[in-house]
Image (tube, rainbow, N blue to C red; front, top):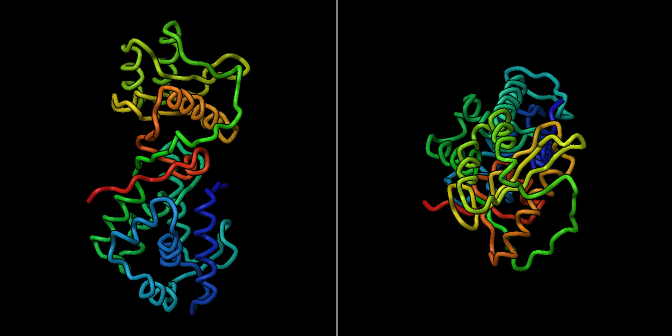
Length: 278
């Protein structure tokens, strides 16, 4: 069973509401596209500013469309077209490939566009804008100077020591090989700005770093937690251990480099997406 982010749940509710006023009363890929594009938070609001998509025209087209086939879905309360089921399956595959456990709007939009289910509703230029703005990792920023930190202390989280290098490198090789070079570079520095989290048995289950991402100062990341240990506050705690260090260093802001789950950081530390320069 898929688990959705809060923003994704709102997109689905808005899509269903539009379907109820449509000729067919069936959710189609077009309804899902419209549900995404009317959102104003995260990276979706940026699409409205930088694309030429006319939302009222899109709405009218979607409302009048007749789906070829219809069926039911475990995720929506009203009937859906069979194309919607294919889109959700493709979106779920993207989510798994990114090693994530919550399906978000980025996965959905990428599935909608790459499955060609909304080609008749978007120009090639607008498809590229959506892919660039909403389906890729984005840099975010959070204001540390005015940030009120939660009271988090844990005997299972500590700053990594040099003697733990081999253990952490092996953990990275097994679970987060994409960040292996970054962590190896960190151990070449005078100080390792990396926190690790362990389980009751003493095994590493997660890590987070700062002043390490792309060798840049003032950046938080990378961070990773084993999938079966997520949604338990481990990532939230690791994030705040790092951000607190960064504030104590004197950083007014922290940039979260290449954030994938945008909504996590929006909720966890009030981070906002940094607009892309055209």
